[in-house]
Image 1 (cartoon, rainbow, N blue to C red):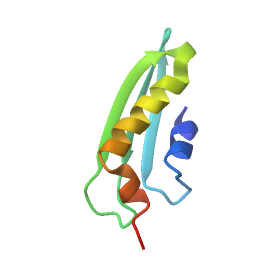
Image 2: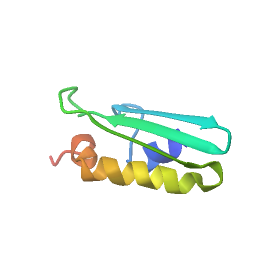
Image 3: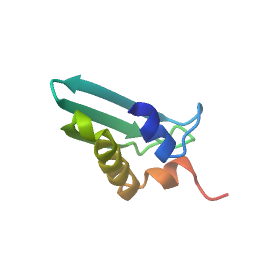
Image 4: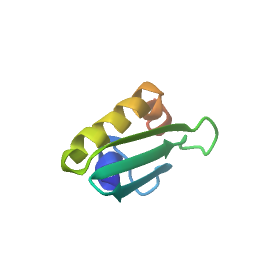
Amino acid sequence: VERALVGKLRGDCHSPIGALAQARGEQIFLQAAVGGRDGGPPVVRSSQQGNRQRLHEVVLAVFTDLERAGAMALLHPAS
């Protein structure tokens, strides 16, 4: 689940992305934070939960939140 989110964010091993998925019963909880490549603020965060059978929807919801908060610009600034 965490790797799926990093992939959607086009992250690599140097990307300041933190993600944690936890399963509780039939539910999955996904929390994520993204910072700038330079290590400076801001840090944008998202968390979502959903049914374990629908992991892709939880990943997409967190990605969408992060994207709307500017995560892609933080991770991939224009040169």
